[in-house]
Each structure stands twice: as structure tokens, then as C-alpha cells.
Length: 241
Image 1 (cartoon, one colour):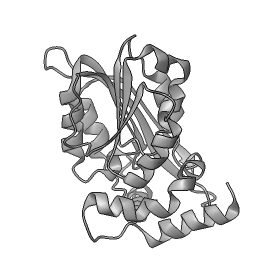
Image 2 (cartoon, rainbow, N blue to C red):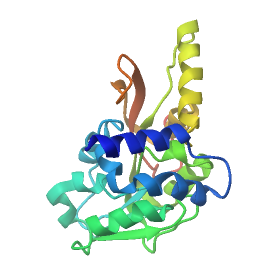
Image 3 (cartoon, rainbow, N blue to C red):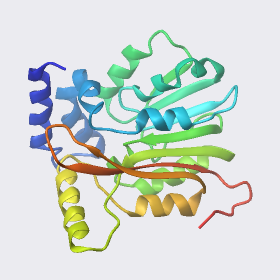
């Protein structure tokens, strides 16, 4: 990534997402100036995305949906498996990022680019797999987005999430770290919440939960917690607690 593009991205992040307008307007205002080089910077910021997609196991002929898909980069990690699916729907609310997704997938008719809200969007067919990649923390009504994801999933369908997390200890250092990360990310419209993982475990049958930390670009010595989660929609309405 050219240093000038990286500095522009850092400047936009330093300016923050702002408070005025609708959620869609804030996303567009924040991402429009950096959309063209969004992916190259986020490769070093958003860890676990490839791993999440590689762990997803949609069956042959599956309908796969990513909510908050941005530029459509994550779907590339399906590789040749994508040709086995019925189609993949990449849903996002930000026109600037969706422009990048349309360019990326222009030659692949199995991938559909959809401008819509993750809280309200419903596909024409039930989904076999729905996933969020660093988008749940950016959705103000994240509980409603999760409920919507489960509603569009077939019974037994797979829900995947990778996203930023918070330290889970109760010592003073962990409490201070939580406050630091909350304030740091909220400036850019990212709202960290321990309740994400707890809620996922309540509403799905947990298949996998991995919690880790990773380095952040331009912040040497600091490591950001993140988690990777896979769960299945219950067949009978019961969930693992």
C-alpha cells in the first residue's frame, strides 16, 4: 500500500465517523475517501477473516449471505468452493464500498451485490450460511441484525462471526484496557461489546469459539482482542447455554 494512501486512511480514521446523519450517511462519509485502498490497510487490521471463511462449510447448492460485506473481499476466501454454491449475496449499506465489490465480482454471476440494511434485509430463499466479518460491531442495532440473520437461516444453518472483542478479566488492567479500546474504536463508529459473544452462545448451538489477540498497524506493542465464532441455528428452538 503506498504510504500516501495509508496516511490518508489514518487521517480519515483520526477524523472519525462523526455523529450527524443516518447510519448509512455516516458510513458513506467515513469510507468514501478511503474506499479505493480499503482492503490493503484492513488486511493488517482485521484478523481471522480468512480463517472464518475457510471454516464455513456450506453444502453443495448452498445460499450463502454475508451481512456487512463491504468491498466483497472476504468471499474471495471461498476460492473454488464458491462454484459449488447456488449463489452468494454480499449485503452492505455503504455505496462507496459496494462500488468496490461490484468491480471485484463483475465477472462472477454467482455473487450478488446488494445495497441493504443488515437489520431488515431478507433474501428470497432461506440461507444455508450467514456470516458477519467485522461488521457486527458497526451495526448500532446489532441484536436486531443477529435476529435477522437467524430468521433467514434454515434450521441447522451455520452462523459465523469474526470481530473485535474486549478483555474479559476483572483486574484493573483489563478494566482500563476495556475503557481504552471502547473509546478508541467508538471514534470510528465501531462499538465493542462483550455481550456479542454471550448472545451468540445463547441464540445458536456453539460449534467453535476462538479468542485471540493481534497486532494493530501503526500501534507497536498494542494487541487487540478478537474472536471467531461458529454456531448452528437450532433445529428445535433449543440452544446451548
